[in-house]
Length: 482
Image 1 (cartoon, rainbow, N blue to C red):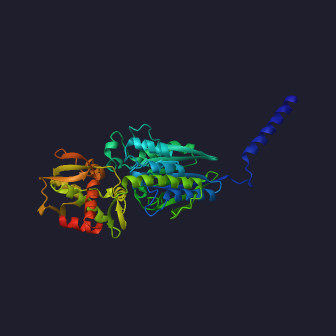
Image 2 (image 1 turned 45 degrees about the vertical axis):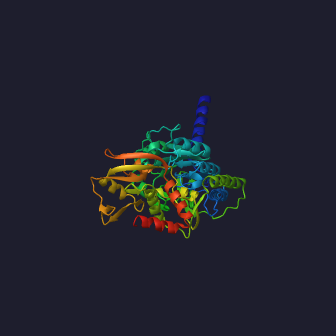
Image 3 (image 1 turned 90 degrees about the vertical axis):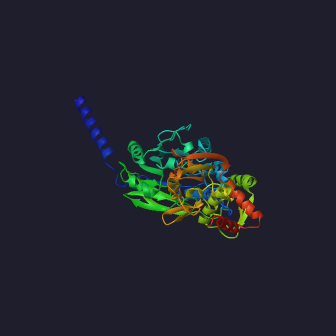
């Protein structure tokens, strides 16, 4: 009897315990978690503008307000890459001031952009150490960098985990300084991002892809991923995008820290939903009310002071805002003016990164317009190859004239088999932006002259003759019958 009684009691306990596990209290609410993603892309060093706009401080203050207003939110501050090259305050100091300010602003993760290596691999290593940013890229296969890139990261939060996967444009080696990337290989992101999504799916509540590639092009391969991410943050093309493609949200800003994206996500039980998306313009003024905002301003001011000492020289004065296309022509013709014995000069249109405003034009303004580190190259090549390169240059050429589909130099049609000599710069010489100068039958000489020096010299000499920028431009165009 004692044995039967024990068995009966045990069975009752088993039934009660099992029932308690299986029956859900209909009045018990599911746990809700809220996530806030604060995102910028293609900052290109625009922590400060010439009109006194302290963008670094403004962004910090606005993001602090966002976090304060989103009570209990899990907040992630992230970037789509291309953090550094651009303004003179960034380019002249190898991106260091930007790295310091991004670190203070609280960026955690960035996709690896194509301009991260513009100053070389060692400055990039220094910048990511200073900023504390984790750069992600799943489709970079090999590198000489001291620290390899993680393809993805899983971040824990109070009630679960988020997976972040990074990717870089396949064009990396064609639109970056190839000499810095000799032992680095980039593959198509579809397979590598897909691999990370499948690997991380059972380990995370939802997944986010940050890709340094335009959302408009990324959508073409994202649709074929084996596992769909919740959000894809895009970059590279400086266009604002907030669109849903195939049940995936794509978000991108116009870059240059003109705005930031704010994406709110809610997780309730196993259900994860994007509840709000905004692209918010930056305010024009900071109030410097916090110690960190003041510190960001102090860092900016200290580098501005150094910049003025190194590149504050006034070259000329512009009577009005100078047209972008005219500046491209001005630059190319200043090259040919310094090397009049040669046939043509050219640059890639993507080399020009700023505007020339009305008023004094300083050396620092030229650095902001032409921020990359380049030397002048003299290239002798066949006419057919010269024509190919000229066709890539839009308005960034001089010495040649296009009539219809034909090119002319000194009034004569360019002959395909004849040799011509062009004045170019190191970036396009090495194949950047798909230019072709390293050819079997070409002859190239890398000079020691900085690519900005002929333009700076021409403007200073024109100013000494009493010319303003517009007059200097007209005088140079007349010289080359433009």
